Length: 114
Image (cartoon, rainbow, N blue to C red; front, side):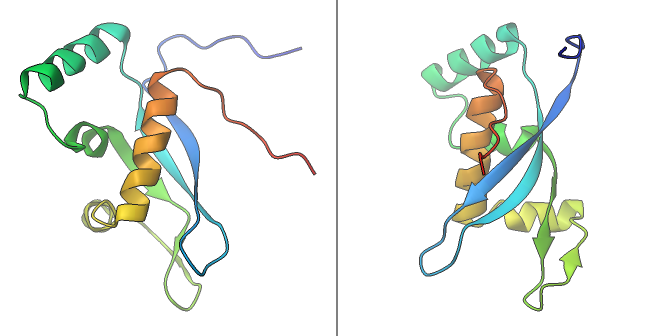
């Protein structure tokens, strides 16, 4: 039996897969704020009028990131400062944009089959 739907969750955790050229697939986790439909409509109106541009809304809604390692493979704690730097990387940002869209559309986390 599935668990009951929890009302009022402000954020969810989303696995983000990235495939950079010449590397195997990599993953990290993004905690993303869930916008209610009224907030989504307001954002859409701001985008239509030109008030909101780019991906600032995604950057604002990414609460935390985890699953990163340094060049030696040592796990890293992602501070707010590091999160800001990571979101300047096009692979990280575009992965977060895809995850943000899935979260706001209510898409479930998919699991790979063995």
